[in-house]
Length: 108
Image 1 (cartoon, rainbow, N blue to C red):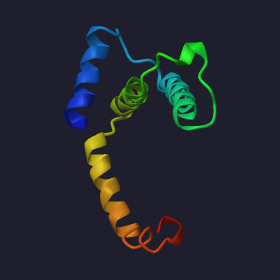
Image 2 (cartoon, rainbow, N blue to C red):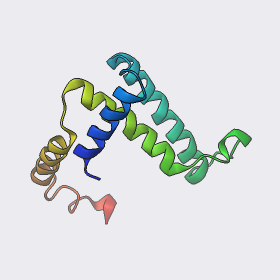
Image 3 (cartoon, helix red, strand yellow):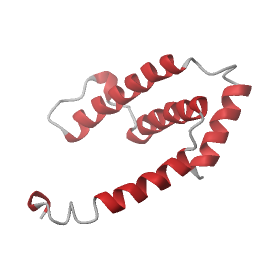
Image 4 (cartoon, rainbow, N blue to C red):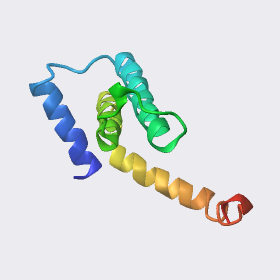
């Protein structure tokens, strides 16, 4: 699935099952909440925190998909084509960071 296809599927789902989009500001708050849930799971899986009972059955991929879902909603609402934005972003990073990371002693 391309990013454009994902945006279209989210839009179709919202308009047929979800009734309508939440406001952009509400979705921004939801995105922050979803990133927090992902961060909690990452901290317990790869960091030093121990799992709480409520965290034990969480799925990392599902948490990442929740973040992506809300980001796709925001892109749809604000008219951003994420596929084009990613292509532009890759081009920017390829020019800006062409030698930056190769020359970073911390990464050697």
